[in-house]
Amino acid sequence: MNNLQTTSLRIANNQLWILDQQALPQQSNWLDASTVELLVGHIHALRVRGAPLIGLSASLLLASLAERGESREKLGAALETLRAARPTAVNLMNNLDRMKQALGQSDWAGALVNEAWRLVEEDKQLCDAIALAGSKLVTPGSRLLTHCNTGGLATAGCGTALGVIHKAFLAGNVQQVWVDETRPLLQGGRLTAWELGELNIPYQLICDSMAASLMAKGEVDAVWVGADRIAANGDVANKIGTYSLAVLAKYHGIPFYVAAPVTTLDSSCPNGEAIPIEQRAAVEVTGVAGSFGAVQWAPANAQVCNPAFDVTPAELISGWVLDSGVITPEQVRDGVFKAQA
Image (tube, rainbow, N blue to C red; front, side, top):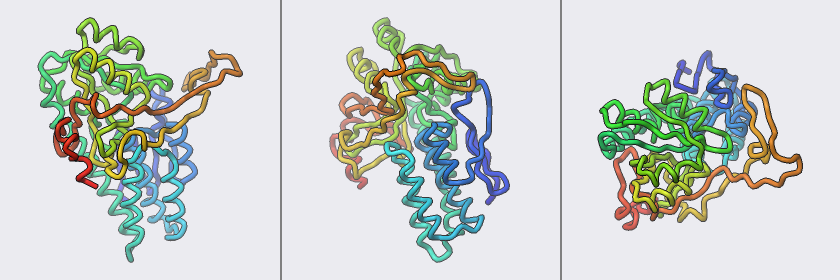
């Protein structure tokens, strides 16, 4: 395979490496992800994360394994193991469906490599198209609020919601960004803050529970988030806490936009109730861990509920910004997503 370098993926000497997103921003560690076991472990631990990036890393690993001479049968088993690594983000399933088609071809090794590269290039193009479409919705002097991480760390390109914000900033329309810390794993505080700093975009980090107060004071002009799955009726699964922001934005009359590639659309999923929500380990809520070590603040026997995602109903969303353009609530009610089944 050719070498590859994105913000958080690397192919070198036919080996896959990922940037450890659990160690950022204090450390930039590149970790070996050249076996199924290693990559699944990284996905479970969120060392590699972001719906588009998870799908791309799995696809690139299959291509790398094919180049290294792995048999078709073992690749098929590897594909299904990777498919089960995270249940909510549909990009993984969509990408692996395409890799499975490639595996069925006579020249399956070459087909896997070619398909993986196509997926990477498509993701870059999708990100650019999302940024272009979404930036037109950002008015001059905007103070934008975002949740979790949706930049180059989560994609092969410029990102989704954060790509929109960056393009709008370059056009002179972003005054500053409010960054939710995004409990419990602090992807906003650790990753989005780091990316915005790298892009020289002014930001202020806030606790998730501060958003309502800022909205009440008129200090938020729009909310921009990404998505891990979009159902046929327009309901959106995204990082836990997104639904709360949508309710707050609706109450305060603030636009709430979802930016995502078409690979996030699951037209076979009728609504948000049908989206599987991943439950994660209690330790993520009872304390915190990172490059600095680990601290536990809750009682050792504390009972924990830790859903990784929530579902935002379509009626709370002002617009879905895809690579194909901006989809309006009226179009969603008319069945535009269902028509893509």
